[in-house]
Image (cartoon, rainbow, N blue to C red):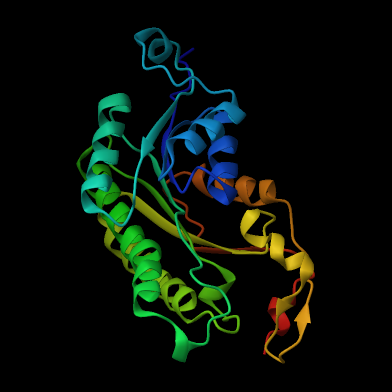
Length: 265
């Protein structure tokens, strides 16, 4: 009986939060994963949490054992993204999944009239330009490889639908990400490239710790918000990733059940 072929994934922003949870989930369930992020030490911590091998030896490749490849990457830099894809090709030979996760909220609670342009650009460069660069590079790889095809999952947000107060840069980039997802999904059809988006609300990470102390609502009140276990997000991403390429979750919303999203405004 032929051994199950190990699938290859890239997870950006894999050093913490949702990216770490997804990378660990994939590694623990048989995927080999290239972990991309700005801090190699944090990427190594994510790989260690999954108990994955980071060695490139032939013995590991022959055994089909999942491997972790840590690549320092600033997704807003085209050269870094090109180097990431080259490292994946050199180690694994192909790419089956890109989880386009790297992102930043930017300066929180800053009214639009006070938002510094440099801060705006940083959020746009990371959340939108970075997602485009990674998707473009993955698209090229998936189109050219044999067998052709693969899957891209973009990390949107509840803010791809409804903003929080004082979040203009983050919200604008997440709305734009939805357009990127739709366009990539359409353009990828002839090549077996499936593209979807997961919109996440209040996963328990370092980024959401502040919610326990109260978050500004549309009515001006500070209200604590519930969170959900980030591993539930990771399992949802894996479900989307492991569908056959003939099927696609175009958009999925995963949120803390009682967060105020449905009643925002």
